[in-house]
Length: 348
Image 1 (cartoon, rainbow, N blue to C red):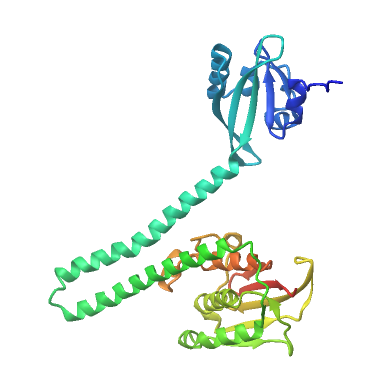
Image 2 (image 1 turned 180 degrees about the vertical axis):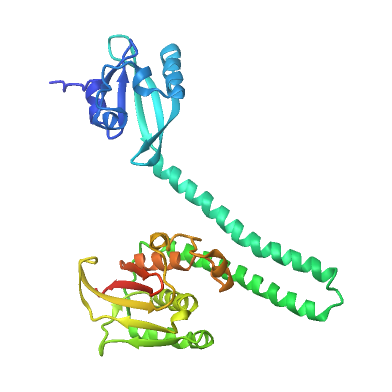
């Protein structure tokens, strides 16, 4: 017994893509659920001009009917406030009643968004490197000219040039670190690490920075802190970044608290978790900045960030490291009262 051969309409309905058929009279005869969601529930029966509308697609459909050759086009739309992009494949088919046209839409939105992110990232990196390079070129020109015989000016300019070179070096270092973290983000670390030991050594390493800023760092740890699975170097990087930021941007409050909460059930982790909180009592962060703090190169105050040596990548690195550890980052802040960064990490 010969199995039934599915009709073009049945195939269209089964496709996981937006798909539709335009009949010989140029009216839409079949549209699957994905097509109706994108183009409208009442699209079947409409002429393709009113159903699809975009001139480039209509031109491609006309070409397929005329030449009986495949065509490709793009469909640009908008869904829930987000721009969408589809690759549209248009091909002639024989349905037994003359030539029809099969149209499928392949969603390229995520690919387009990823490309835009890469372009934006390159543009931001170029800008961040160009700024200190421009300053360096300016000082070099000055040292060769007006300041050639002025030792005091030479010392001042060389000091600034050293700062700018250091900033570029830190930026390159952060870029490499971010790349490495992203590359390994899917591989969860499993070696046991001691959070209290990591935090104590980090605070000790930052003691000169805290002293210079007249900030006292106080720890609040439970008697026993269970080991957790993690990457010691990466977690050290997380807490160094958070504590150093608290010193730099929360110095006005004069103190910082570093707290480890007792291990407890976490709804966010769906299991046991330990929370480490870094709290300052400085000027705080306005609510509209909070959601964007972990974006690459996002700064609340660009001028101040550059003054204290920030690259705009620190919290992006923190976010990816915490994600690799299957943890969560929570940020709470009140203007003129301070900011708290809470890192929640699974115990198992």
